[in-house]
Image 1 (cartoon, rainbow, N blue to C red):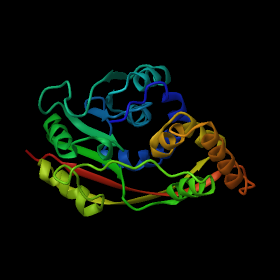
Image 2 (tube, rainbow, N blue to C red):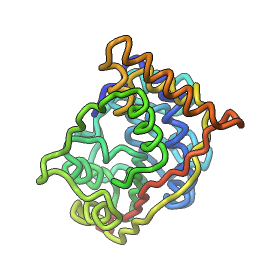
Image 3 (tube, one colour):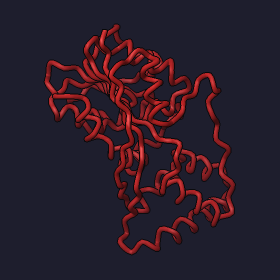
Image 4 (cartoon, rainbow, N blue to C red):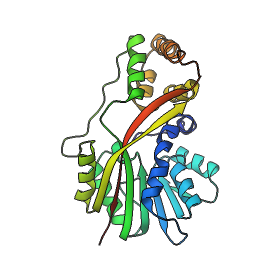
Length: 260
Protein backbone atom coordinates (compact mmCIF):
# COMPACT_ATOMS: atom_id res chain seq x y z
CA UNK A 1 0.00 0.00 0.00
CA UNK A 2 1.24 3.49 -0.84
CA UNK A 3 2.88 5.38 2.05
CA UNK A 4 0.94 8.51 2.97
CA UNK A 5 3.68 10.00 5.14
CA UNK A 6 3.50 13.82 5.33
CA UNK A 7 0.34 13.95 3.18
CA UNK A 8 -2.38 13.07 5.70
CA UNK A 9 -3.62 16.64 6.07
CA UNK A 10 -3.92 17.12 2.30
CA UNK A 11 -5.68 13.76 2.02
CA UNK A 12 -8.18 14.80 4.69
CA UNK A 13 -9.00 17.99 2.76
CA UNK A 14 -9.48 16.15 -0.51
CA UNK A 15 -9.87 12.43 -1.15
CA UNK A 16 -11.02 11.65 2.38
CA UNK A 17 -14.11 13.73 1.61
CA UNK A 18 -14.68 11.66 -1.53
CA UNK A 19 -14.41 8.41 0.45
CA UNK A 20 -16.74 9.77 3.14
CA UNK A 21 -19.61 9.52 0.66
CA UNK A 22 -20.02 5.84 1.50
CA UNK A 23 -20.03 6.06 5.32
CA UNK A 24 -23.79 6.10 5.82
CA UNK A 25 -24.28 3.03 3.65
CA UNK A 26 -21.45 1.18 5.38
CA UNK A 27 -23.00 1.71 8.81
CA UNK A 28 -26.50 0.80 7.62
CA UNK A 29 -25.11 -2.54 6.47
CA UNK A 30 -23.14 -2.99 9.70
CA UNK A 31 -26.25 -3.37 11.83
CA UNK A 32 -27.27 -1.72 15.11
CA UNK A 33 -24.57 -0.18 17.25
CA UNK A 34 -24.10 -1.18 20.87
CA UNK A 35 -21.17 -0.79 23.30
CA UNK A 36 -21.13 -4.57 23.56
CA UNK A 37 -20.41 -4.88 19.84
CA UNK A 38 -16.78 -4.40 18.77
CA UNK A 39 -16.11 -2.81 15.39
CA UNK A 40 -12.73 -2.72 13.65
CA UNK A 41 -12.23 -0.09 10.96
CA UNK A 42 -9.22 -1.25 8.97
CA UNK A 43 -7.38 1.29 6.82
CA UNK A 44 -9.07 3.93 8.93
CA UNK A 45 -7.15 6.90 7.49
CA UNK A 46 -8.29 10.04 9.33
CA UNK A 47 -10.88 7.97 11.24
CA UNK A 48 -14.04 9.00 9.38
CA UNK A 49 -15.79 5.61 9.51
CA UNK A 50 -14.49 4.91 13.02
CA UNK A 51 -15.91 8.16 14.37
CA UNK A 52 -19.29 7.59 12.74
CA UNK A 53 -19.39 4.04 14.16
CA UNK A 54 -18.55 5.34 17.64
CA UNK A 55 -21.38 7.86 17.35
CA UNK A 56 -23.69 4.99 16.38
CA UNK A 57 -22.85 3.19 19.63
CA UNK A 58 -20.11 0.70 18.76
CA UNK A 59 -16.94 0.08 20.72
CA UNK A 60 -14.44 1.00 17.99
CA UNK A 61 -10.83 0.33 17.07
CA UNK A 62 -9.28 2.01 14.02
CA UNK A 63 -6.11 0.62 12.43
CA UNK A 64 -3.96 1.99 9.62
CA UNK A 65 -0.47 1.19 8.38
CA UNK A 66 0.58 4.85 8.16
CA UNK A 67 1.67 6.72 11.28
CA UNK A 68 0.70 10.16 9.93
CA UNK A 69 -2.87 8.98 9.35
CA UNK A 70 -3.06 7.53 12.86
CA UNK A 71 -1.67 10.75 14.35
CA UNK A 72 -4.32 12.73 12.46
CA UNK A 73 -7.12 10.35 13.55
CA UNK A 74 -6.05 10.63 17.19
CA UNK A 75 -6.14 14.44 17.01
CA UNK A 76 -9.49 14.53 15.23
CA UNK A 77 -11.28 11.90 17.30
CA UNK A 78 -10.07 11.70 20.91
CA UNK A 79 -11.56 8.85 22.87
CA UNK A 80 -11.35 6.33 20.01
CA UNK A 81 -8.60 3.72 20.03
CA UNK A 82 -6.34 4.00 16.98
CA UNK A 83 -3.17 2.08 16.20
CA UNK A 84 -0.79 1.04 13.44
CA UNK A 85 -1.23 -2.30 11.71
CA UNK A 86 -1.32 -3.71 8.20
CA UNK A 87 -4.37 -5.46 6.85
CA UNK A 88 -2.26 -8.52 6.01
CA UNK A 89 -1.41 -9.23 9.66
CA UNK A 90 -3.95 -7.97 12.17
CA UNK A 91 -2.78 -7.84 15.81
CA UNK A 92 -5.73 -9.77 17.21
CA UNK A 93 -6.90 -13.25 18.05
CA UNK A 94 -9.20 -15.25 15.82
CA UNK A 95 -12.86 -14.18 15.84
CA UNK A 96 -12.32 -10.95 17.79
CA UNK A 97 -14.70 -8.45 16.16
CA UNK A 98 -18.44 -8.33 15.64
CA UNK A 99 -18.04 -6.05 12.62
CA UNK A 100 -15.10 -5.14 10.38
CA UNK A 101 -15.31 -2.24 7.96
CA UNK A 102 -12.86 -1.53 5.13
CA UNK A 103 -13.60 1.65 3.19
CA UNK A 104 -11.57 1.67 -0.05
CA UNK A 105 -8.79 -0.52 1.32
CA UNK A 106 -8.96 -3.89 -0.45
CA UNK A 107 -8.47 -2.25 -3.86
CA UNK A 108 -5.02 -1.01 -2.72
CA UNK A 109 -3.44 -4.06 -1.07
CA UNK A 110 -0.82 -6.16 -2.92
CA UNK A 111 -2.63 -9.45 -2.21
CA UNK A 112 -6.42 -8.94 -1.94
CA UNK A 113 -7.16 -12.64 -1.41
CA UNK A 114 -4.74 -13.00 1.48
CA UNK A 115 -5.99 -9.76 3.04
CA UNK A 116 -9.63 -10.84 2.79
CA UNK A 117 -8.83 -14.19 4.39
CA UNK A 118 -7.13 -12.35 7.26
CA UNK A 119 -10.23 -10.21 7.77
CA UNK A 120 -12.37 -13.35 7.78
CA UNK A 121 -10.13 -14.76 10.50
CA UNK A 122 -10.71 -11.69 12.68
CA UNK A 123 -14.54 -11.64 12.40
CA UNK A 124 -16.37 -13.69 15.00
CA UNK A 125 -18.89 -16.36 14.09
CA UNK A 126 -22.15 -14.51 13.45
CA UNK A 127 -20.25 -11.30 12.67
CA UNK A 128 -20.28 -9.10 9.60
CA UNK A 129 -17.82 -7.61 7.13
CA UNK A 130 -18.62 -4.46 5.11
CA UNK A 131 -16.27 -3.06 2.47
CA UNK A 132 -16.10 -0.71 -0.49
CA UNK A 133 -13.83 -0.59 -3.53
CA UNK A 134 -13.55 1.54 -6.64
CA UNK A 135 -14.80 -0.03 -9.84
CA UNK A 136 -12.75 -0.30 -13.01
CA UNK A 137 -15.18 2.09 -14.72
CA UNK A 138 -13.65 5.58 -15.18
CA UNK A 139 -15.74 8.35 -13.64
CA UNK A 140 -15.91 12.15 -13.93
CA UNK A 141 -12.96 12.62 -11.59
CA UNK A 142 -10.79 10.38 -13.79
CA UNK A 143 -11.93 12.31 -16.83
CA UNK A 144 -11.04 15.60 -15.12
CA UNK A 145 -7.46 14.37 -14.58
CA UNK A 146 -7.29 13.10 -18.18
CA UNK A 147 -8.38 16.54 -19.40
CA UNK A 148 -5.76 18.27 -17.25
CA UNK A 149 -2.97 16.04 -18.55
CA UNK A 150 -4.08 16.37 -22.17
CA UNK A 151 -4.24 20.17 -21.96
CA UNK A 152 -0.85 20.29 -20.21
CA UNK A 153 0.69 17.86 -22.74
CA UNK A 154 1.63 15.46 -19.95
CA UNK A 155 1.74 11.67 -20.22
CA UNK A 156 0.40 9.85 -17.14
CA UNK A 157 2.68 7.55 -15.23
CA UNK A 158 2.17 3.96 -16.22
CA UNK A 159 0.03 2.21 -13.65
CA UNK A 160 0.98 -1.11 -12.11
CA UNK A 161 -1.41 -4.04 -12.12
CA UNK A 162 -1.42 -6.97 -9.78
CA UNK A 163 -0.37 -10.35 -11.15
CA UNK A 164 -3.42 -12.20 -12.54
CA UNK A 165 -3.24 -14.85 -9.82
CA UNK A 166 -3.58 -12.15 -7.13
CA UNK A 167 -6.01 -9.75 -8.79
CA UNK A 168 -9.81 -9.86 -9.03
CA UNK A 169 -12.40 -8.26 -11.28
CA UNK A 170 -13.49 -4.88 -9.95
CA UNK A 171 -17.14 -5.71 -10.59
CA UNK A 172 -19.98 -6.75 -8.29
CA UNK A 173 -19.46 -10.35 -9.33
CA UNK A 174 -15.70 -10.20 -8.90
CA UNK A 175 -15.78 -8.43 -5.53
CA UNK A 176 -18.52 -10.68 -4.20
CA UNK A 177 -16.60 -13.71 -5.38
CA UNK A 178 -13.50 -12.53 -3.53
CA UNK A 179 -15.43 -12.42 -0.24
CA UNK A 180 -17.06 -15.79 -0.83
CA UNK A 181 -13.69 -17.35 -1.64
CA UNK A 182 -12.38 -16.12 1.75
CA UNK A 183 -15.20 -17.97 3.54
CA UNK A 184 -17.88 -15.29 3.92
CA UNK A 185 -21.52 -16.14 3.26
CA UNK A 186 -24.69 -14.14 2.49
CA UNK A 187 -22.62 -11.88 0.26
CA UNK A 188 -24.49 -8.84 -1.07
CA UNK A 189 -22.53 -6.61 -3.45
CA UNK A 190 -23.91 -3.77 -5.52
CA UNK A 191 -23.12 -0.36 -6.99
CA UNK A 192 -23.22 2.76 -4.85
CA UNK A 193 -23.55 6.26 -6.34
CA UNK A 194 -23.19 9.71 -4.79
CA UNK A 195 -22.05 13.20 -5.72
CA UNK A 196 -18.66 14.39 -4.48
CA UNK A 197 -18.62 18.14 -3.85
CA UNK A 198 -15.36 19.97 -3.20
CA UNK A 199 -13.65 23.31 -3.81
CA UNK A 200 -11.09 23.16 -6.62
CA UNK A 201 -8.26 24.35 -4.36
CA UNK A 202 -8.94 21.61 -1.81
CA UNK A 203 -8.89 18.92 -4.48
CA UNK A 204 -5.70 20.31 -6.00
CA UNK A 205 -3.95 20.14 -2.62
CA UNK A 206 -3.96 16.34 -3.01
CA UNK A 207 -2.16 16.63 -6.33
CA UNK A 208 0.51 18.89 -4.87
CA UNK A 209 0.97 16.37 -2.05
CA UNK A 210 1.55 13.53 -4.50
CA UNK A 211 -1.60 11.62 -3.60
CA UNK A 212 -3.06 9.01 -5.98
CA UNK A 213 -1.99 8.47 -9.57
CA UNK A 214 -2.51 12.09 -10.58
CA UNK A 215 -0.37 13.29 -7.68
CA UNK A 216 2.41 10.88 -8.56
CA UNK A 217 2.28 12.05 -12.16
CA UNK A 218 2.48 15.68 -11.03
CA UNK A 219 5.45 15.06 -8.74
CA UNK A 220 7.33 13.22 -11.49
CA UNK A 221 7.30 16.30 -13.76
CA UNK A 222 9.93 18.99 -14.00
CA UNK A 223 9.08 22.53 -12.90
CA UNK A 224 7.70 23.47 -16.32
CA UNK A 225 5.48 20.41 -16.48
CA UNK A 226 4.08 21.01 -13.00
CA UNK A 227 3.31 24.61 -13.90
CA UNK A 228 1.47 23.51 -17.07
CA UNK A 229 -0.62 21.12 -15.01
CA UNK A 230 -1.46 23.84 -12.48
CA UNK A 231 -2.49 26.22 -15.25
CA UNK A 232 -4.58 23.60 -17.03
CA UNK A 233 -6.40 22.62 -13.84
CA UNK A 234 -7.09 26.27 -12.94
CA UNK A 235 -8.50 26.96 -16.41
CA UNK A 236 -10.67 23.85 -16.54
CA UNK A 237 -12.13 24.21 -13.05
CA UNK A 238 -12.71 27.96 -13.44
CA UNK A 239 -15.58 27.19 -15.80
CA UNK A 240 -17.74 26.25 -12.78
CA UNK A 241 -19.02 29.59 -11.48
CA UNK A 242 -20.36 28.08 -8.26
CA UNK A 243 -16.82 27.59 -7.01
CA UNK A 244 -17.62 23.98 -6.10
CA UNK A 245 -16.91 20.92 -8.21
CA UNK A 246 -19.78 18.42 -8.29
CA UNK A 247 -18.50 15.03 -9.41
CA UNK A 248 -20.83 11.99 -9.67
CA UNK A 249 -19.03 9.04 -8.10
CA UNK A 250 -19.40 5.27 -8.38
CA UNK A 251 -18.13 2.48 -6.13
CA UNK A 252 -19.00 -1.05 -5.08
CA UNK A 253 -20.21 -1.83 -1.58
CA UNK A 254 -20.38 -5.36 -0.23
CA UNK A 255 -21.53 -6.89 3.02
CA UNK A 256 -21.09 -10.49 4.09
CA UNK A 257 -21.41 -12.67 7.17
CA UNK A 258 -19.19 -15.20 8.88
CA UNK A 259 -21.66 -17.95 9.61
CA UNK A 260 -19.31 -20.35 11.42
